[in-house]
Length: 322
Image 1 (tube, rainbow, N blue to C red):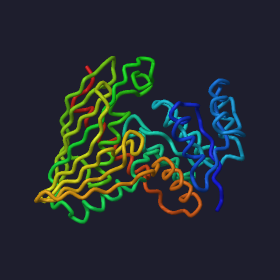
Image 2: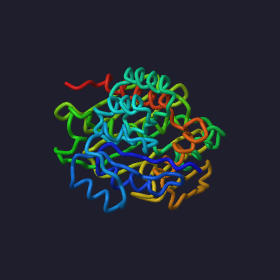
Image 3: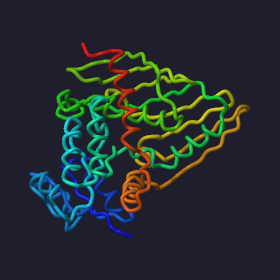
Image 4: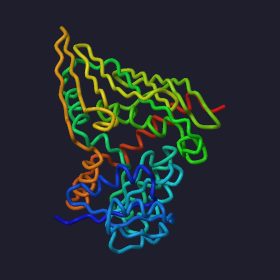
């Protein structure tokens, strides 16, 4: 198996705590280099990953001939710029979500990907987890009859105004940070796209902190609550004519709670399926590497991510910032 040598652009806390360890643990992957101008942050990474090479500049990492793929955890407003630069440097790239701030920006990403003939994708790890693949299979097989309603909730309380998630100029806000999960997984599991949206959004200094949205899909409706100002909670519920499917920790599986899917049939029977110990970040890295080695289609192409951004744009348009 060819080992994919990864480089990370930026020493973010998320990269240090989640994606760095995932690359290190993934089959067929090696965390080889990090680009950061912070000696302190570089030392933290090198303590966790001995032998990690450090580049003081992002462009230097992109020029490194011993890097096969690049992971980008930079602030949201920098994602398009550095994804394009990585592709121009001949590096396949996995960029954190949301990879763009508006749906039309996908035009240049897809064009650059196709022109380079390289894999470029959004780091949407949840679709790699078997709980979501199972949910999609159950819905497609009619396990709960005709789907009529989806309830989605994702929240946590982040009042640190120095955090980039609480800054409009860096593309912060609740929908971009966590709304991508509720919207994207509903699309992934059902295979449908929203037709219209209504929204009630709470804005703070130009970014959203709470949104209650109602989306109409071709065959079902979706109620969605997303907030960075409420107590931590996450849940997805698919309500059909003959039963329900509930995912209890759909977005941070085995971090905040066990990956568990409950199927409740008409009549009260409930079947519970569990996936203890699986790490969707590791599964994501392995899937990316497999696509690089074999040319197999990547499970989350830019075209899929574009649909999620289009839905977010629809919600923002329904209740724009004052």
